[in-house]
Image (cartoon, rainbow, N blue to C red; front, side, top):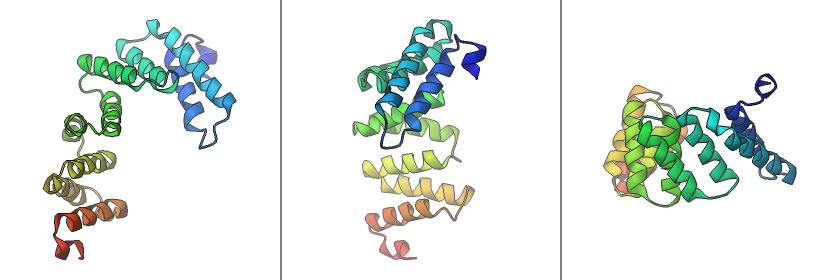
Length: 178
């Protein structure tokens, strides 16, 4: 609909392209993948008409999904964060890239940054505690879990399981068996 109203709406093309990918499931048809690439190319072509922030987001989406070049995607997010260091999308996606590369020091830096701004996020709680566990900082991971339970929802079963697993791996078997 947005493209019908404004055929030069670059972010609409980006979103349409990503929806082709997101809704594809495990059995993406070549047609849907071609549509995704076509929409993302169009978004990139039109990106000279958008804000700097949107341009970097479009570039990162294009590099990841069309060119399959994670280095270029990472650079686009780094460039975005130089100008907009608080950008949630840029920080979130850069965390994922660094985690996939097992670069936990950089993933941790960005995850702690976001977590300090939003301690209510379940996703950030899981990410940060998971990274802490990867680098052997189990006590910090347990603190993150405890904060969530005390201030959000105590009955979150997957978080509870991760918490008890961290307790068990830390050697606190008594607390883990409660």
